[in-house]
Image (cartoon, rainbow, N blue to C red; front, side):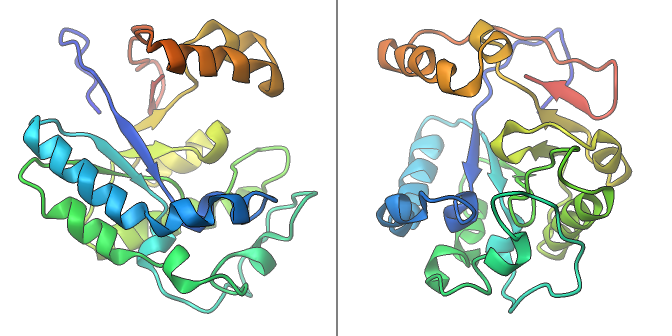
Length: 225
């Protein structure tokens, strides 16, 4: 992402998470078949972006690149619906192919066009400041950066899981320069989540042009809505 306001840009950002995106909800089984086709989909998208010479931001959940057997000693966020580190895919009985996929990064890195690799957390933790402790947030963000660095990535951009914006100071301390902010559609700001869906689906169905936005550089990291 770029902060030069004199140049207009069309930004595509792709959350890439597999089972990490829904393991804490009841919908993991709903998307299992789709996750099994993620590698094929990423391959086709890479070909498409190469064909049109279009660089994008791939927001990867960094645990996709990290094989492990759990995080017993890590600070646990206090969510009412799940015990986070008891439920993560690497310790639950979830097919390994649904949570460990380093070949995705290999495919994205093999393209003719140079794409940006951003962060979508380490375990897709929701950084809600009312339910996620500072210690848990710091562990999540700094580990994501460390895994990225280990794979030769110096990340600039953070895409918050579930669009829950929080702990910008943690991002700043970790060297993150940009984050993807809330959509600039009017209903994202004024309506509760269940009421937004019909408007969002209508926008997608009619393929309406998204609103133009300006990067907010008044704080660090900068907000790219």
